[in-house]
Image (tube, rainbow, N blue to C red; front, side, top):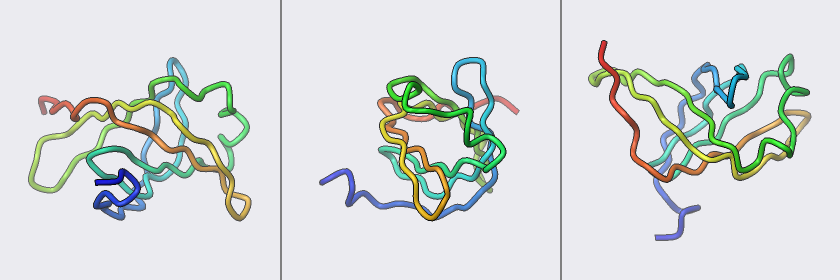
Length: 100
């Protein structure tokens, strides 16, 4: 199946994205088994540039009926839409469940 056609879960959940030693505030817009779309908060928009593409980024998510999960993905795309900055992540490995 084409990756762009993968089933995505719409979340719009506030999270912090970790890129190396940097925390970037924003919202996780959607999530699939292959990747995620993250909208950067305006206060952190200048801290993420094209130079970050190719780096790994991490975030944690707590599903309702599952343990907390840590997702790690490669930053593969940065784009702007309506004065908002978005980052696309590509997952190469499955999430890791964290102990509570």
